[in-house]
Length: 375
Image: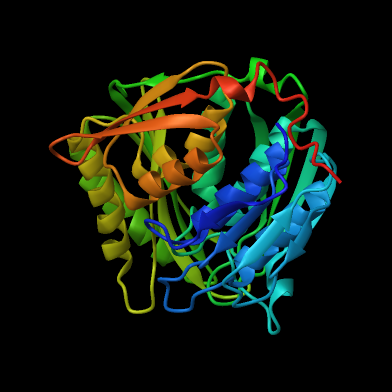
């Protein structure tokens, strides 16, 4: 994969227009060695430009491929990123709170989304320690990452393990996750597997945990009890634990993991000041029942998070999702800008979608040379 003299220009305001475009663009740039310029970053957000978690993602990817970067500052609407070396496996420590004076509770899991695929396609084992928020709004919580996202990546051929060192909640964060990634090396493409997940099969088990940090034990118990009561009609084995943990500040949430015959999905709702524990459980269970009523196999978050890995698989993939979202369409667009895959999305009458990912033949039979940026 050659690196053109001129950078690939990515419109950061396209579609959903959030931080996912930036993370996808820089992740793929690190893998392919392609220089990119991301313009109008998060232009439609109340506070546009780079926030602390985005800046930390930028700097982490700079470390992975020794990239030259310009525009890496809080609030910056424009970023130039030029890889100068192949992605290097190794031990890395990233702290979202260090990116902004006074600290930040930016999501550790979004950070992980940015760096995991480049490290998975590199050669050698990597270990990551990422500090910040672990159970945050507008981002996948640790439970979803460890119990839903990583198992699906394992099915594709990407081996990664996550451990919660300390939980971190809004507004202080100060949590930490530890992740080990087994790099596939230059023959990564041959080792990846496409997926065919058009049907999910029967729902076998509903697991998960109700988690309360720095709150009375009864908060977790009430969330779990209400969820169990509502899920009796689901006709599946129910195994929801109630747990309390220590953290830098209070927080709570219900994190459901659904085992179907062919896939595992998840549904998560965080507590808020003034929201009853029972209401948290009701929202999470309602999300599950919406999924069950659909014909989709993947939940809405898995659908967009699986696109980039499948773009590097040796043959096409196909899956259904409960609902086509702006995140899905925007991420498909960003991947398409690199020419790595053709992603087709067919929207059904109820909003559900059939997604096909056809890796581009121009990407080659393996990934040798990807990330070998010109100097």
